[in-house]
Image 1 (cartoon, rainbow, N blue to C red):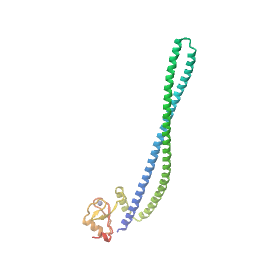
Image 2: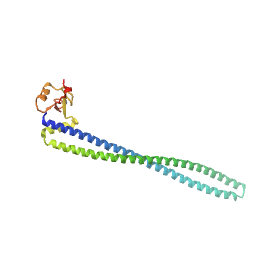
Image 3: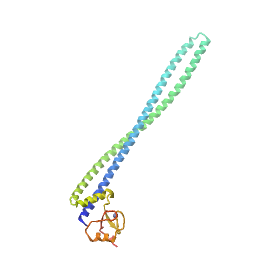
Image 4: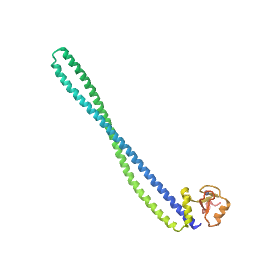
Length: 241
Ligand SMILES: [Zn+2]
């Protein structure tokens, strides 16, 4: 095989490896971002639950004030009732007492209901806090793993690129340029074998002339259809016709 082509094939292998590693890096970034996103949602839910609890507590405090006022009013009315001088006065005070008592029981019921709401909210908050802590822990664990793998990948890529640089120095510049131009769209299939008389990149049948050129010369042959560089695979015995 043409030496340049052989070197280019090695470069193509390097490029493929780098592409795979870069893809893995990208996946890691996405996974990490996904966990962070879930944590952000939990944090928001937690914040909302706490705000809701505060609102209920404010409402409860307001109603407790009202209840205290009502209780004080009731005490005053009892005094007023005792000092009533006639039946008509007593009746009027009794009506006020009835209204105050109704208010008292309505407020007491509402306060009990609000206390139950607060208890439920507290349960929600506890659950959210647990989940949040769990997610944070998961993120930390993943981060350690992710960072390790990231470091490894970057090191591997660096190594591959160094090896590639060494090869590139020995390749004809025009040919390298052609390869790089092809690589923009072939995604690691710029140099392909010929299988069953067809280009293994675009799968078009090649003419006998192209096959002959490939088999009998050391020239670099391009697929007339897609423009990829072709090479003849070394056949093993089992593949021989
Ligand atoms: Zn082709």
